[in-house]
Amino acid sequence: MIINEFNTQKDLFDFYPKDKYFKLRDIFNDYWDDFLVFAVNRNLTIRPIVKHEVEKMMICKTPYLGYSFYHCPHCDNHIHVYNTCKSRFCNSCGVKYAKARSLAIESKLINCNHRHLVFTISDILWPLFLEKRSRLNFMFDAVNLTLSSWFKEMYKKEKYKPGFILTLHTFGRDDKWNVHIHCLYSEIALGNNSSKKFDFIPFDMLRKRFQKILLDLLEKDIGKEKFRPIKNKVYYKSYNGFYVRAKKNEFPNSRKAISYILRYCGRPCFAEYRIIDIDDEDYISFWYQRHEDDKFVVEKIHIFEFIARIIRHIPEKGFKTIRYYGIYASKSHKLYNTCRLLIDKAKVPFYKSLLKWRNFIYTTFKHDPLKCPNCDSTMTFEYAFT
Image 1 (cartoon, one colour):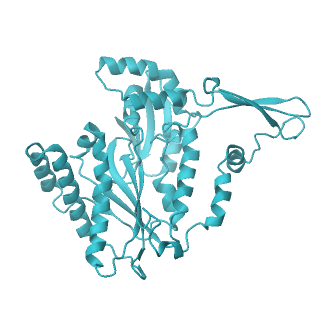
Image 2 (cartoon, rainbow, N blue to C red):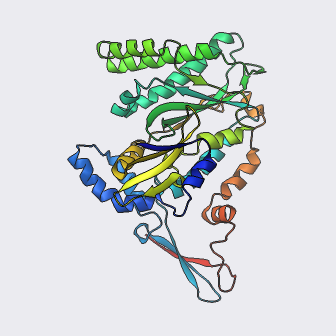
Image 3 (tube, rainbow, N blue to C red):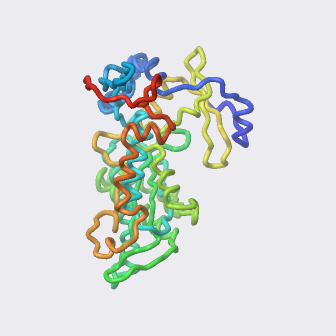
């Protein structure tokens, strides 16, 4: 239920001054057991992976997961460093996971301009992917076939091949089910003996080709007789093809684009700072910026609906939401190793070291977690309890 709309974020914050902060972990600790009872009563199916990931998140950095014991050799001070859950539904662990994924991508990218493309589909098809989650693989297949076949037709002789990285999002700005693909697309392609720069993208062709390929994949999986009415409805509604967005120079550099498409990688699709309030009747109010008109919308729903809305985006175990294609799929291309990369290979080990626990805390919060508050000595590891 939408209860308010604002033209600017300042208007929103003036109307709803922030005096309390809410954490998803606290919300789930307070409401998860009651939600499970509610789910049984409403015949809602809670996937095993959802239960597993949520319950891991709820005990993140608590004694239940074990800890490491550090001791100061000079003043006998000591600390317990509790283990993290590494759940794909934990905001705390997700920050580090997203940085690790960003580094992995940056270490593969050629140092050139990359275009950010978004492939969206008709909302008529959304329930099909919720009904059978393995169909989400078709989104990757359809985008890959669309871009690869276009390049193959254009450059048959030289066999130019671009590089692109696809990330699946199953949510929109309001966190409802909305399946789409974000694509980071190199504006340089490698051929047999040369490379070629390009920045032209034929939107009309991509829209219609992506639509046809995806619908054909779904028809093969569902069956022609059952899927044909849905297919006809989609073609009638989206007669110009599915929407493909590819704004030129949308981001100042490739790192900004990577950060944007990975912002909810390995973590809940919901940012905690968007929560405004939870009232005594267990209704939660939160805001988001609506895509259609860029207005800031405040929505109020029951906490159980909120939980149901965000847990559906937890992927199945082993499902890869980030995938590499073209020259990024394999480093076997003979010209790839001659290209200058976004991050020099010699620097990658250093950047990886920054993701280690102590270094990550220091670079993020400017605080050394092993510095003794009493004597400034460095605490030493004694033992781990699991």
